[in-house]
Length: 350
Ligand code: SAH
Image 1 (cartoon, rainbow, N blue to C red):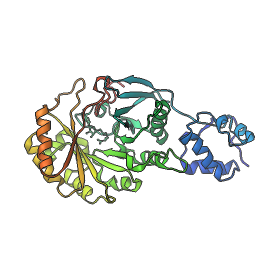
Image 2: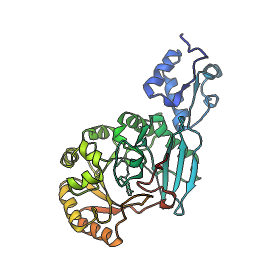
Image 3: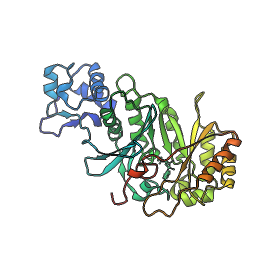
Image 4: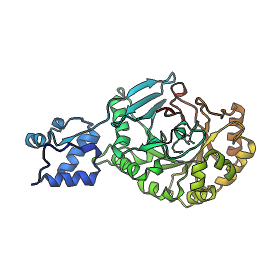
């Protein structure tokens, strides 16, 4: 049996995908079921120390000492908004920081998870977009945000939905995001979070939508504009990569399971994309797609040239789309006082 010499740096079990964990178990000469046992300790019981894996023999646990660790992120710093929204700020091992937000709403508790440090894209109305991309998150850094939030819950609290809508563009980091989704949704050895309660949001990587379909999670698309010219202005990089007509064609071709629908998000920016004509154009663009629409009134951040829409404009926009038969919701800004709302994550200096 080839043992890793004790002098090598310990393997972070949390950083291994399930196949790599299985080959490690094989290399150590352990039975196949040992993989599942360890994964359950890590993702279901959320233990941080190997000696606590008490259904492994003492001998096996001692063998792992110095060879393996469960490398969870350091405890995050937390801020709490006046409206109850909680923002968790994690320092990663290389000193970069990411943020995750917990948003209570009656009996529901939504966690908003980050997938990149900064973002690949340059959407003009988004603070994260101004940071540029520092790097992709690894699968375990995505999952760790959820594990840590779960450690933090108060008695009786439960995360009821997970949205990949924090910092970053999930479909620019598809491999890690897919692996994270697997670990979060697997009911045998993973966190066991229901896939239908998980939503991944993309700014519009049309050719990667089928990757999302395979994962069984919900898909949200940030439309944010009613014409190609507008989208060019507001989301220049995204629209250059995938033009609006291609995106809508990919949405029409998306293999939606029965009783599911797509979500379209639309940031309302005063005087930019919030007119009655815009609403009418959005209605025409989405015609025939089984979907609902979430309107997000712009959340301001220091240095932005954009302004939030008036309440009247928001209401009018919603009414026009409703009259066309759409289900339209307004995503009220939560956590704005702690810069925890949509588009406010990350600091330009970070
Ligand atoms: N990159 C992905 C995931 C981020 S989700 C995506 O674009 O979908 C963040 C959502 O908040 C997106 O719908 C985005 O359009 C919206 N958003 C970004 N900045 C915002 C801001 N300042 N105010 C309101 N919504 C914003």
